[in-house]
Length: 90
Image (cartoon, rainbow, N blue to C red; front, top):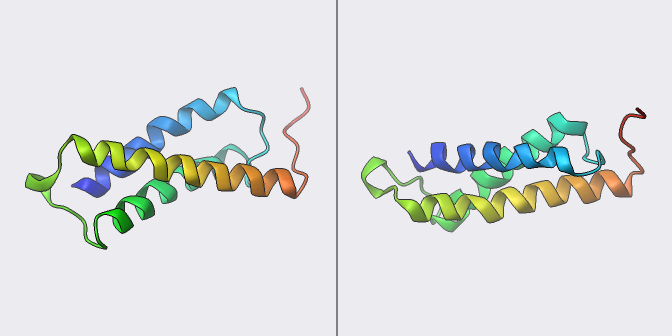
């Protein structure tokens, strides 16, 4: 159940990437993948390489997903910026 919480936090925070310049590796879809994978992996590592069950899931699991998502988005953004990726010209 905690994996669902971590992934949902990643998706929720991903929505705010529309306010950033589009320099993510893979565009907005790459940012989505980075947010979800970052939140899931970070939560998995912090929880001791286990996925807490339904009765062990609490508000702390929500907070665990936030830094993982931000780390994933930052990695995607800086990698894309280093490769010289520019967003679409409008």
